[in-house]
Length: 112
Image (cartoon, rainbow, N blue to C red; front, side, top):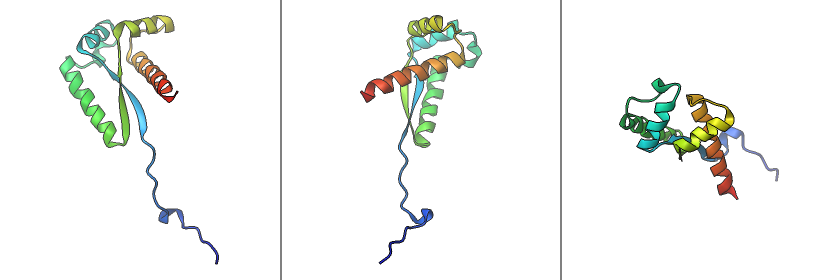
């Protein structure tokens, strides 16, 4: 008896693996330090409480899209040292790059 393969649209759907995503996270004190020294303070919310509200909404939106957000705590002094070593300013681009790097290190550490 010949075996027939189902066409792709009739094959059972496999759930795609969850996508992990590092998201910047600050304590109130660290947020204030990073904002105070940034070259783009206008990119920050007016207050930490506004930032928290925006960040929590962002986490919920990511989760709704099937993305597993992972809070990456930023310590201002560590970030400033990273900027110095990399020759970068405290900018939105640098903050994003720093969080991506931290998240990748954390992910690699958990894989071993």
